[in-house]
Amino acid sequence: MNEEIEYRIKRVQAGEIQDYAYIVKEYQRQIFVYCWRLLGNEQEAEEAVQDIFVNAFEKISRYKLTVGFSSWLYKLAYHHCMNLIRKKNLQRKFKLTLFTSTNMTSDSAAQVMERQLFSEPLSRALDQLSAEERNLLVLRIFEERTFGEIGEIINKSEEAIKKKYGRTKTKLKKIMEPLKEDHKCVSYKTELKNKA
Image (tube, rainbow, N blue to C red; front, side, top):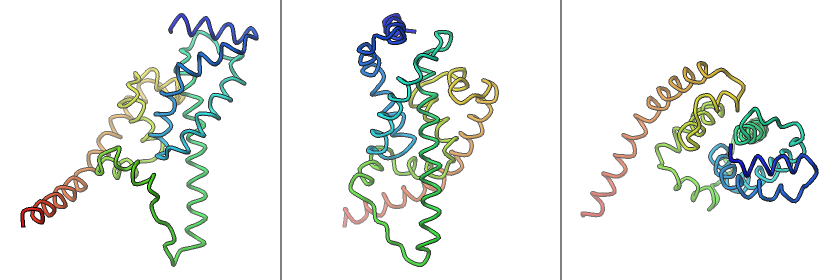
């Protein structure tokens, strides 16, 4: 762990709360990007980051230096985001039961922009994965976490994480195959229109 972070954590635990601003500054961007990738919405990610850092501040006295602070913070972020995803899924199911016959939703400009940040086939494929599978891919690929760190974050053994990661990669490849073909067809049709 970064010695400066370790020093600041000890100071915050000793009551020097102004040092917490340094910790937030160091990790805020990483946690925001992680939350955005999990939640798929910039505004929700911004709100989640605030909640996560408040929660981390409240629990920092229980943090032990035996575990990496980054892993501890990602674990808090993981649990917070998973709770938000579960809540959103429940709300979506409830709305579906209320409005089954009419489609009353449309994409906002922010949602369209978010989809453009990732390749269209990848975005659609990630949407088809469970929140846990998506989290595993985000931690391993985008956040470049080791299997051991991911295990600490989601309370599973390193071996279980490796197996789950392999299965998730295989599942993602299977999902993306037809999506890539659809995307190629659209691109080909667009190219024909442009040439005509």
